[in-house]
Amino acid sequence: TRVLSGGRPAMKQEPSRATVGIPLVHEGEDVKVVEVYDGNRNAPVVMAPGEGGESGRGMALVAGLARSWGFRDTRLGKAVFFELLAWP
Image 1 (cartoon, rainbow, N blue to C red):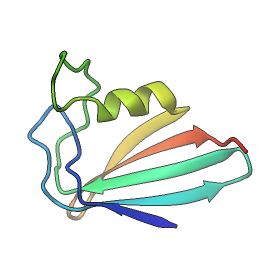
Image 2 (image 1 turned 30 degrees about the horizontal axis):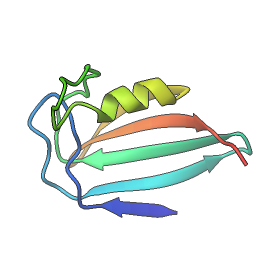
Image 3 (image 1 turned 90 degrees about the horizontal axis):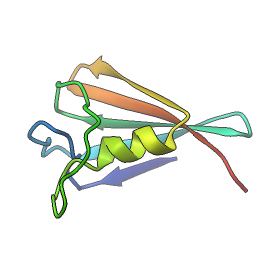
């Protein structure tokens, strides 16, 4: 399954304006692995968003909800990957 979002990833750095591809990779019954691609080569930063801020929530959500997460460079930017425990 592949989900596409036209939204901009919210990161501490200036967000990428590229379309974000989000493939869902099933890994067993209990874990879902998700990868998010963007054209920004900067490492993701988990930060506490300011009150009323319009960015900075994406990686905070990933860090809070994911069992584990990381990132890797790609030819066109980076991929952030994370594992979510599945529920029925």
